[in-house]
Amino acid sequence: MTGGTPAGTERRGARTARWHLVLVLVAVLAVVGGLLAWSVARTGDRDRLVGGPAAAGDAAPTTGVVPPGAVASSTRPTTTAAPATTTTAPPGPAAITLAFAGDLLPHQPLNDQAAAYGRAVGKPYDFAPMLAPMAPILGAADAAICHMEVPLAPPGEAISSYPSFGAPAELVDGIAAAGYDGCSTASNHSLDRGRAGIATLLDRFDERHLRHAGTARVPEEGGGVATTYDIQGVQVAHLSYAYDFNGYRIPADAPWAVNQIDPARIRSDAATARAAGADLVVVSLHWGTEYESAPSAYQRDVAQQVLPSPDIDLVIGHHAHVVQPIELVEGTYVVWGLGNQLSNQTQDVRRDGLTVVVRAVPGEGRWTVTGVEAVPTWVDLPSFRVLPVVPTLNDPATPPGLRDQLAASYDRTAAVVAGPATPGVALAPRP
Image 1 (cartoon, rainbow, N blue to C red):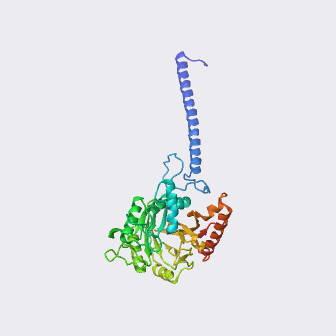
Image 2 (tube, rainbow, N blue to C red; image 1 turned 90 degrees about the horizontal axis):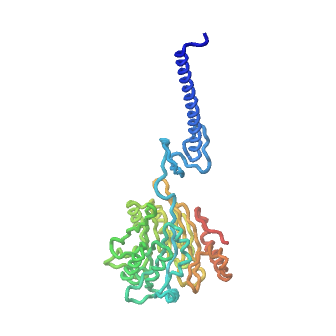
Image 3 (cartoon, helix red, strand yellow; image 1 turned 135 degrees about the vertical axis):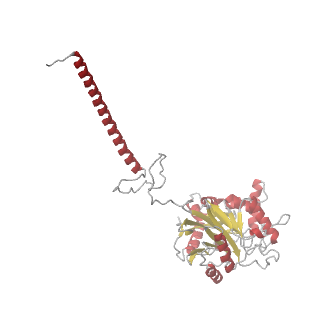
């Protein structure tokens, strides 16, 4: 029979409908499964493009890729676990830079020019125009440290110049305006105006939120106690010492008022700073023979006694009033002398100066100085503007006469700095 009863026909129709439904569901599931597989494959490709885990045998990308275990630049969340062997970069910056400059020595003609600038803005003195050209270089460093060679005149007392200095308080204001974060203060002139001159200087530093090392008002900030700069979590300790004080005696009732060079003491102070948590220890030394570009026997003797100290990372020199070389002594950079940054010493070689920008990076358990950039400077007279030589030569507005002076200054400084051919010391080419 090819037919059947009506009931049998209805049952067969129902079974047929159910089978059709099953077939439709199977087809739908197959399509969905294919779409899911395609999506997973695309996700894997995308993971590899943004630094996700690559399949076995995939070549490592060469650019634009975040290594496994690092945080990708994409904001897309991921649930992929980092491999067990992944190491995390140490916290803090990948490098820091520190700028150091030469002597600030305000002779009377310089003070007179600061008074002229001050009259234009309603102040007794204004040193800011003199140091302003250095602001871009100082501002680019993580910390900038000057060398304040003189005390301030105490309140109610007249300012004074050579041979016994007492500077206007506005000199500190100019330092702050230029972008300095602090200064070394131990020099042969530290005691020119007694403890009152030291206190007046450091009080003004505090008012302008500047750090200082080398002289002290109270025992707690003297006696070889390091001043610390916190640079993005990196602790930089700064110590400052001078060879002598021009016949003035260290006060018997305040032996901590100023730091005198003593190699054993310097090593001990540096070790104390390191033990207190310093990542870098910088020692500023006021030393050498005035107007001599070659380091003296005294300088070399002190350096040999101080180094190699495992606790000293950099030595910065002052006092000669001319640029001196940069060398490695027992593996530590020694900037023998930075010359004058600001003074009225009018001889060409004494108008030359040097600012150094030092780079340091983290290493195995400690930070290390890896290079020194030498930035030649020149004191323009009679304006007393401190000019960075290379940028000023690159400025088309620089007049021909000044351009010739700057070029000659560069050549003198380059001859001194390039003399020892010290690895890691860089000097921008003359334009």
